[in-house]
Image 1: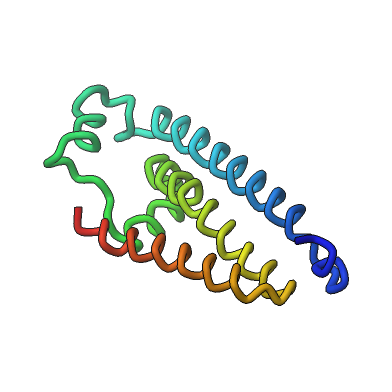
Image 2 (image 1 turned 60 degrees about the vertical axis):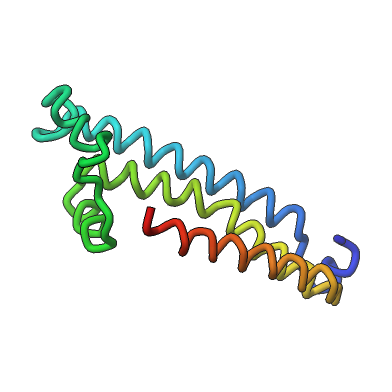
Length: 133
């Protein structure tokens, strides 16, 4: 997989490895920082069981909008940072599949481009179908 990619200056395995490391490590930092902020900020987890139950029960007010996420990040909301970290953790393998498509395309391996594109589309469709759950 790598020989033809190196002709183009693109090393697929190294790029994928870097993507996975950066994605997982950044996610870890965001989740840890968000957890710390949630315990330190007024109205966060320091409020005790009611604040945690608000997020974990089926009737809880779990954040579901991009607007809430963006506003929470801007205001240093720990829960928003945790959600951002979790979203990044979920998206890292999806981005890995997309990067694989690029690698196969540079190799001109049409069969694997098609197969990997189908895998990516199935992942995206599963996210879309799961949003109503």
